[in-house]
Image (cartoon, rainbow, N blue to C red; front, side, top):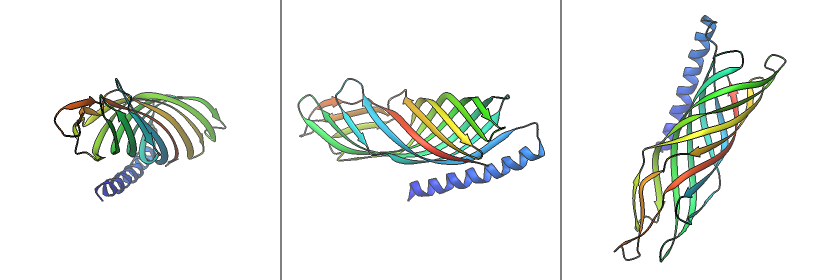
Length: 218
């Protein structure tokens, strides 16, 4: 319920701000601001340095709002707010015992993207954009089942980098992107032995995300 409330709040704020930005842009034509929302499907793979942990992600639906400022004829600066839930099943062979668990993570991502329009057909009827930039993810919550034999400490903020391609026609576009996590999701993620007496493995999770989304611009 908490995550659904956050999602509806995010979409409402995005719509309200988009309407306001549209009115402002009409009043001041020297400022060219575009905004909109998107929905997409993302596949998230967790990697763990120094271990043989394997994760499986069935994909998740992402929701986003974005705001784009035109800097020059073909250069843009775009900011986004993305709600991204993901679920995993991971298996890890620790020093002496096999471990398996389900992991659910909910992110709120805020990337800053530098965009370049490399082609424009008939004044925006069809166009292509490439982009790259940094981002920060706020991890809203994590759920692990079972978690009785784990000592963990979540990183509230995670840094990442984005690389992507946009193909658009009119007010609709397709966004294809790759996101590379640069910092670990956890300060500490330690497995204990079955009797809970000693640590037997330490996982350092980072994420890699490939996603495709459909976007609508106001």
